[in-house]
Image 1 (cartoon, helix red, strand yellow):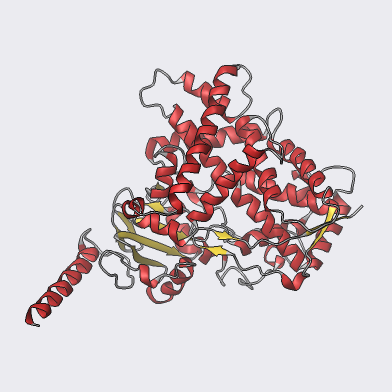
Image 2 (cartoon, helix red, strand yellow):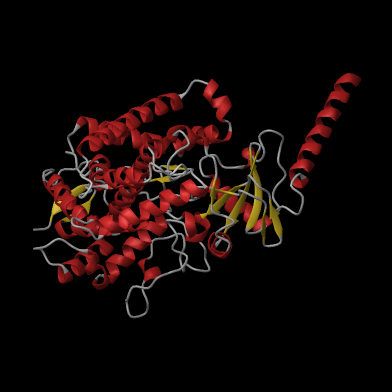
Length: 492
């Protein structure tokens, strides 16, 4: 009995010493937070299905800058618009690091835009932004690609003959085809089995990343690698996707025309040729494969899920759908495709689409940032190698900026004269130097696809508006909307 008591006392002493070391090992004053257990940290305190909700609740006690431990990994959570802006914009250089997320590290082999830091990140981000902008204004710009794809989407929905169908697959196809045009210079048929398998892999990878198992992989990667589970199948399928991308790159290498780049891959290969003599260049094969993978992963499922969620919102609130249709009929009519120039003349439509993105809260914890050195922030010292979690959920639900933060309300984006008004707390794509590189493309797609759909169809569902539940089916890294069978009834 005495020996057992001694062991217990020794264990408690070690635990207390470990906790004390967490608070003092970096020197200075770290942000406050709840007590953490050895090895597992604060994991037991977090709602595994919606950890961001626990973080928001903890901020009521510990303030807008708080410390948590995800296993042994220290994380500082930023809550509210003011804290996020001060960190990601006002102290952008300090907070522009990206954490070594194990899931993404393995999926990308450590290369590409999203997971990189320093010179690699700067070179790839600058190049990607420039290329996106050039193709947006070029010979066959992104707007024209989206308008073209919207016609294919309208034709596919017309073929349903007002019978109910589940729209996830067709929306994934149309959104991904825009990325395919940008990256590969071609689109794929909605019935192409290889293309559908490709999209299914992206969808499953993101769903796994948003599951409790995906979060456990990021916290305990070495342990998870030794355990059986779905993550092994996910990584095998990701490898198939990478092989598909590599094959497309090789095809581009054989058909490259230096004076007439067709797409992102061509532009990258030309830059690679220009910099072959530069030892520090980041324009090489591994970065190209992983950056193309990044563009698909970030640009397919998130945008298509937003459009799918938008249809659910418009079915649940048919009066908003009808008012948008009236506005589109007046400004655009029936004979031509909506264009980006129309947006300024469609204030209610624009307000609804912004409100849908706010309400969806697609990535509630953003992609975590990372401290590459010790940082001073609001009187605290945030040690090197700390995860930074910008809680976008808290900004999109902050009562200071939204009259009714928990409900659908397009008036959040309309002034007293029914003109569109911006709101600084509208940050679904994050903010600062690590904000989403494809934000302009995603916003263009959401507007053009939905305006075109409402121009041609009225949307409903077999169970009626009251059957629609707007709460997410899965919540963690991302909010995944529920799936419903819908009916698209032609308007003309």
